Every structure is written in structure tokens, then in C-alpha cells.
Image 1 (cartoon, one colour):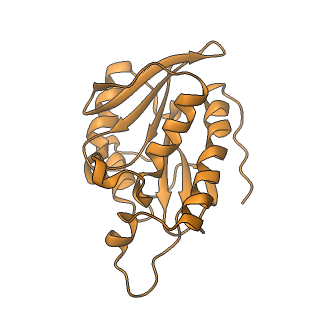
Image 2 (tube, helix red, strand yellow):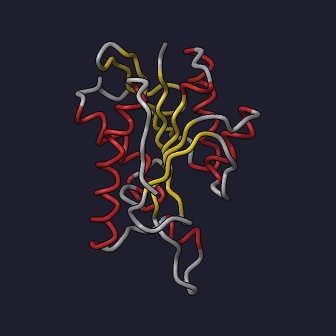
Amino acid sequence: MMKLIVGLGNPGSQYRNTLHNVGFLALDALSSKISADPWRSRFKGLMSRGSYQGNGYILLKPQTFMNVSGESVLACQQFYKVPIPEILIISDDIDRPVGSLRYRTGGGHGGHNGLRNIMQLFGVGDFHRIKIGIGRPDGRQKVADYVLSKPSKDVADLIDHAVQQTVEHQLDFIRDATIHIQP
């Protein structure tokens, strides 16, 4: 049985290393640790496949822009016939403190447009999620401007630490081990 791990973000160099692209960063960290296959264009995204400790996985970075991420995820899921419980989505979360992690299965989209679109197209939200906290903007900055901004060095360091922590959690998911993230 293949596992599908999806990192959410926006394509293009202008969005690289922005707060909204932490899902892409998490997959990049995993792929470099386990020497995943090279990324290739498939399913309106960048995809890599491989095996880790005898368990097959697919990594997917949708290239459809955040608000329609589900198009890429659904196409890949349907092609490989990955059951919903074998899907892990990694995204940013403005309602969590910078650098914090949250793991859960199911639930709502919490205002995240990428998760909202995936849930609309799948008709359910029963997939696994790791959310990486990016914090909220101060009262003067719009949320859209904030999530599409590049973080300060201090914030980037906290996020990088969280991204590195997700690698072990992603490996646990591939191995069918229980994911434990302290609140």
C-alpha cells in the first residue's frame, strides 16, 4: 500500500521560502534525508516516488496554487488508488505559534484555502495532517500579505526547526508508526 504525503505551497520563485510554503519545505527536507527519486512533473504537481524500509510512498507538491491544491492531490490519489487514511497533508497554520507543530486526523480546514479545496474535492476531511505554526500577522498586516511574505531570520529559524522535526513524523507515517507530537 502506497502512502501519499502532500506538502502545500505555491509554485514559482516569488513564493519560495514564504510562510505559506512550509509544506514544500517539509517535503524537501524529507526527500533529501531519504534520497527520494528526483522530482518530476505529474498530476499538476511535482512528484517523487520511492520506498523506505520496505514501505512505498509518493511525495507531492501541487503546482496549482494553494486555492486549488485539491486538483493535484485528487488526480494523484485517484491514479494510485491511495485510500484517504493513507494520505498526510502538511500545511502552514496561522493559528499556531511560530515553529509549533500539530498532528491530527480529520477535522475542519481552519480557514486554510488549500485544505478547504482538498476537502471540497474529496468530500471528506478524514486525512492525516501536520500543521506547522507560522503565527498571526500583527493588526496592521493583511493575512494574505503575511502568509505570502518571507519571514525574518528569527522566525525562519523557528520554522526551519519545525520543518526538520516533521521529517521524523513523515517517516513514522510511511512506516505506519504512531505519530506523536507534543502540544
